[in-house]
Length: 109
Image 1 (cartoon, rainbow, N blue to C red):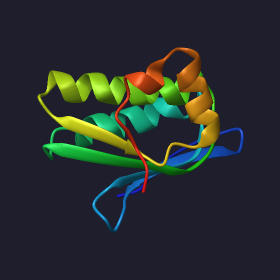
Image 2: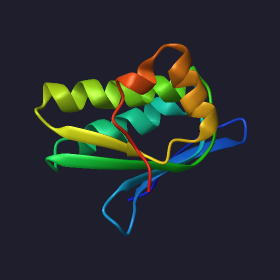
Image 3: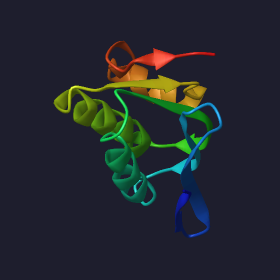
């Protein structure tokens, strides 16, 4: 299933990848992350481990990083594990400003 959030021509989507990961792509901003959060939240109910690939994210503001924190919080609350793969450099810089790079379970392929 593909979910898209589009505001002013900026788009973000989330879909199931061939490798079992959720793949998030596009622009993550205050307008697009609410719909993506609902989709992530729904998917946290299924697997014990949820892998999210961020390699397709083109731009992100702090709302994108907040989405990752919300996913992590929900996973921990549910006794699940979430891992974030291929965080783009821009998002990583935002996470480092608040030391969230030390909290978020970041992975690289």
